[in-house]
Amino acid sequence: MDNYNRVEEIRKKLSIDAVLISNGNNMRYVSGFAGATGYLYISEKRHAVITDFRYTIQAELEAKGYEIITIGNGGYEEAINDILSTEQIEKLGFEAEDMLFANYQKLKEKLKVKELVPVFDDVSHLRKIKTPQELEFIKRAEAIGDEAFTEILSFIKPGMTELEIAAKLEYLMKVKGAQGLSFPAIVASGINSSMPHAVPSHKKIAMGDFLTMDFGCVYEGYCSDMTRTIVIGKASDKQKEIYQTVLKAQMAALEFIKAGYKGKEIDKVARDIIYGAGYEGCFGHGLGHSVGLLIHENPRLSPMEEEIILAGMIETVEPGIYIKGFGGVRIEDLVVVTETGCVNFTHSEKQLIEL
Image 1 (cartoon, rainbow, N blue to C red):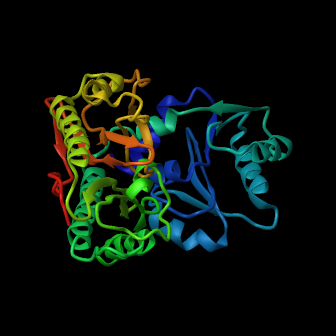
Image 2 (tube, rainbow, N blue to C red; image 1 turned 135 degrees about the horizontal axis):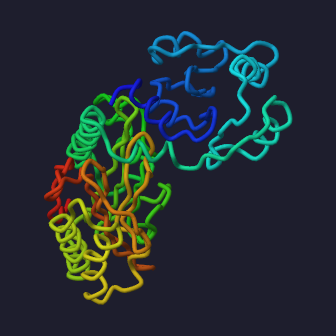
C-alpha cells in the first residue's frame, strides 16, 4: 500500500469534511513525513503536510505528492484556518487519543470551524496489518538484534555492570545499521531480573546470576524487539527448571499461533503451561504485543484481548516467570502471523546459555 492508497483509505473512513492528523507515527505511515513537528490535513480534495521551516525540505523529500505548507508568524492555527476557509470546512476531525487537552483547547478557541469531531483509532487501525515492505524493514531490524546478541556473548564477563552491557548492546545495534533504538535496552541481572522492565544499574553481574537482555532497534522507521535470558556460570537446578518452563510455554504458543484466534486464546496457551507448573502469579504481563513504527502497538496477546489476530500482523511472543528475591526469565521472539501459523523473525539461540 503506497502513500496515495493510504490517503484514499482515510478518505473512505471520513464521515466528516476533513481530518487533522497529529500523531507522528500516523503522519509517517500515511504521508511518509517523519519530522518531529506538524500536522497532516486530509479532506476529499486536498492532502497537505503543515509544518515549520525546520522541516520544510524534509517534508518535500519524504511526503511525495503532498502539498507542503510552512507556517508563518501566525502559527499552526493561522495555516489551518487558511485551508478551512478555502475549503469551507465545517466539521474537522482530530485524533482524540493523541492530542493533548491543552492543544485541543487552543485549536477549539482559534480555529474557524463549527465543530471539532474526535476521531479515535481509525488511522492507527490501518497500521495493524503490515505491507510486504514494512515486513522487510521489521525483519532487518530484528536481524540486527540477532547479530548484536551473538556478539555481546563474547563481551560479557563477571564484574561488568548492567549499564556497561546495555551500552555495548546499543552500540552494536547502531554500528550494524540501526538508525536508533526501539527503547532503552533492558539489562537486568540476579534479583533485578525479577523486574520485567528493570532499568540497567551499576550492579555488577556475578557468577550464578540470571542475566536478562531485552532490546530492539529501528530500521527505516520500524522497530524490532527481542529478549534472551542467560546464566553467568553454571545454572542451578531451580534456574534450569524456570528456564525450561518459560521455553516450553513460548514454544507451545509459537506452535499454536495463527490467524483467526483471539489474542487472549493465544496468551492462554503459554499461561496455562506456566501456571500449571506452579508459577501462577509469576507471569503478570501479557504474552505479547504488536510492533511497527511504534514498539508497543495493538492488537496484543493478553488475557483481556478480544480482537482476532489476522494474517500480516506482527506479534511478540514473550512469556516470563519472575520471582521476587530470586530472579526471572523472559524469552521473546518477533513473528509475523500467517493463515497457517507464523514466520519467526528471531533466530538467536534459545536453549539455555551458560557463560
